Figure 1 (spheres, one colour):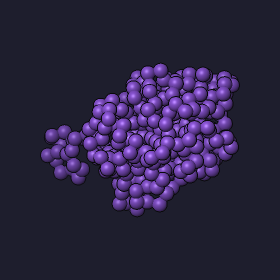
Figure 2 (cartoon, one colour):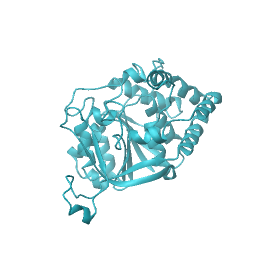
Figure 3 (tube, helix red, strand yellow):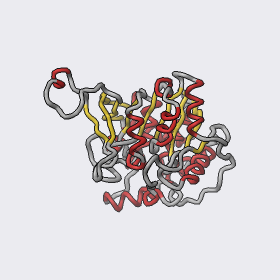
Figure 4 (spheres, helix red, strand yellow):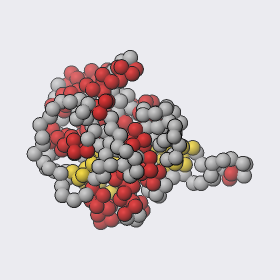
Amino acid sequence: MRLIIDTDTAGDDAFSILLALKAPHVTLEGITICNGNVPFDQQAENALYTLEVAGAGGTVPVWKGCPLPMLRKPVDATEFFGADGMSDAGFPQAQQRPEDGHAVDFLIDTIMSNPGEIEILAQAPLTNIASAYVKEPRIAENLKHLWVMGGLDNSIGNTTPASEFNFYVDPEAAKIVVNAGFRLTLSTWTLTMNSGLLPDDKLRVIEAMDTPLSRFFMTISQAPFKRTEMRYGRPLSSHPDSLTCACAIDPEVMLETADCLVDVETQGELTRAYSSICTPLTPDEADIDFLWPAAPANARVIRKADTNRFAEMLIAALAD
């Protein structure tokens, strides 16, 4: 598997990078940085430090992409992840530096030079992916697969009642991407709440391992632990990005999927970035006066994942 991770590196984004790095059948071709969780340059530093702490410093290029959403004012999640995205751990600067050039050009060049071979894990707002598509639409047909963490599957969001963070930050980009014709799998916040919460017993295993990477995990999880305890009454270890990575690198993690018609709301005041997800109409249903279009599915939506298998994959990555 030849994989590019597009990320707004903070917290769980780092664990997703670790999963990809530790999978023996995955070649991480590059990491691209998009606006999102924390200040833009800090996201690049977080990705570089994650590579270094994993023993992969200097082996995977990191490219800076779009520092702002397409049309909206930037939104961050520093109240959840800390000002540096890593629970204010104060990690030292990594020796590796970002590459010269722009992430969008790296994405286009890599995909077009390797048609049908590259997959992307998009675990940030979709500004970089949408910008690459707008500049070179042929990437949609030449990318082997696009894995997107974003949106909601008819549930309550983590940013507004109607929206998930990645789609909320740049809904215009999300709308472009889901309608671009990529071979697309969508991992939603709904899936995270159903299948991506690390059980307490697995969390205790990670803490007891006391390896450099397990200590890294526990250190950068402290701010999310505190925030979720305030909101839900107990600390939760939520993993939208690394669960999506687990599904990408091990399809057996996916227990239930559905081919769906997906679109994104960009006009609503209260429903900004609402992801409309429904199964396509049958020919008989299309003859009835439904208000949604009789269009074919444009995404595979993961409905259920194997939480235990995912947790064991994460534990194995942190054990090295």
